[in-house]
Length: 298
Image (cartoon, rainbow, N blue to C red; front, top):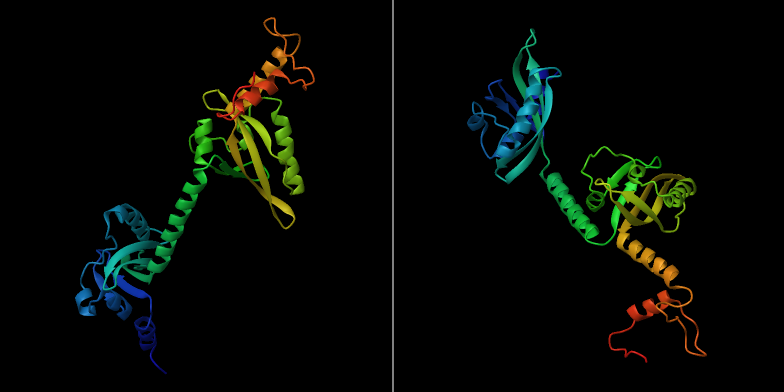
């Protein structure tokens, strides 16, 4: 039967993963052929040198924090290291474990590493696409959000936080916490509850929110329930700030009330004989909607 030491040596020597053993002081005691091949150096060059898993200053604190775990239970840690190799800079994911003396003192550390450079580049590409998509989404008039069926916010567009004057982690987890006491909000809440219960989309509605400084804003809400296995698992939607539009509508409504009736400043709102009668507001709207090159009619 082949000796156990020989079997173990073959397993380690033919590993595709990188295997390294180093002392508490960081001095390399053993490296397998895979490590030598990636580093572009011989075992003789590497043994006795310092194994330093910090190649960039920005990672130093993170790696140091992880390595501290090697000297206390469970005496293991995971570290990502960008290191120079014959293939250029590569990202190695290290899994390290301490070897202990009978007294519990750390006598050496064994680490196995796997090249995850391709994975890291894919993650960067995904993050880049996510940033570009978010930039595209945030550039329009609509502001996006999502919340659970229990009204707990999952995602809030940065522009919504700006609109309300909220900071990240402001403490308000329920979207209903931002609603004013305006009775008009009742209809909006009812539509959200119906959408959650039925899993069907409700018509667009309006809500009045309270800002951090005590002001109010009106938004138009367009939302869709996300249904899985016949159960609503989330509500996703978009908001549009309609505060100015609301003010204009209220102003026109007030003007309509004030200007209706028997004349204004001694002059009545009368139509020409045989012409349909128009309200003052309709007349104002027709003026605002007239093209610039359209002549006034006497």
